[in-house]
Length: 332
Ligand SMILES: NC(=O)c1ccc[n+]([C@@H]2O[C@H](COP(=O)([O-])OP(=O)(O)OC[C@H]3O[C@@H](n4cnc5c(N)ncnc54)[C@H](OP(=O)(O)O)[C@@H]3O)[C@@H](O)[C@H]2O)c1
Image 1 (cartoon, helix red, strand yellow):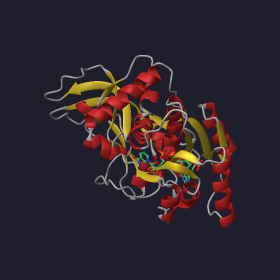
Image 2 (tube, rainbow, N blue to C red):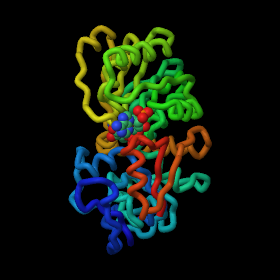
Image 3 (cartoon, protein in one colour):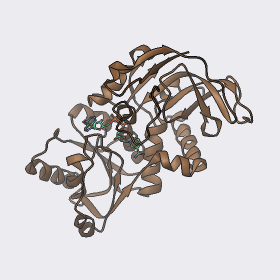
């Protein structure tokens, strides 16, 4: 089987396509013929040796896959050979075959494509956990999403709408804001690229307040961080919840704590990967619920571009260059 390997840290174009032996499933594992692999920002970070989880070199990136079960390891009874499945695996998905823990697998209904099935687990799983378990978003509340046309951002828009919130989408271009509005956001705003002057930071706070009827965000979903974070926190409503999702813009922001005091608001960390490890049953139930909503057409993960395994560097490059809209997928 072929795999696209990171042999050394560096640009995605230096990954190498190699022929490897088929892996053998161990106890509770299944071997999957991968049909599609979703690309996520952690893939960009892993290639640059900037991610918290560091697989041993050489390794393929690719944290979520959909495909067909090829072989069962000892003790596996929840799936059978030939089943259509999706699963998050941390890394390894840029390959024609992967091993996965059978207990993490979710079935893929016949009306959901492998591309879509490979492109929702990390993003919708993260946003569902963030909005439902952490922020406890309520119907009628205002949810502001930054990076709203990115992978996790667009999933937060769709889930926020499905949970009855009024969603306001922030992104770095009108094209990105329009995509979020197409996915249900009620309104949106364009923010400038870094670096932000003091005036631009104040303008960002003012814009968020204006778009939330002067009250500020009840819940703010932030996957970008850096200089966007503090102006966003300054635009929280009383008893708002600020969700720390990630730092795609670069720096991890340092926040003056008095802002939380003045707003009576919470800053809430979100780490979906750790949540799935600590509470695998709840995480699996969440994913099955999300898959149900996708199958019923209530959620529509947006796959904007697909690339072959041989061209998978181009997929990572789109995210790295801030050009990805919705999800980018590698197909085998
Ligand atoms: N906490 C968790 O459990 C969890 C789970 C999954 C992902 N994450 C994190 O969430 C973040 C987004 O991941 P994703 O997979 O959704 O990535 P993505 O699809 O590439 O989206 C990232 C968004 O960030 C914005 N951005 C701002 N500055 C950027 C820059 N310099 N380079 C690239 N993008 C930039 C872009 O939107 P604009 O251009 O509109 O600003 C882009 O749409 C990452 O930091 C990732 O590590 C966290």
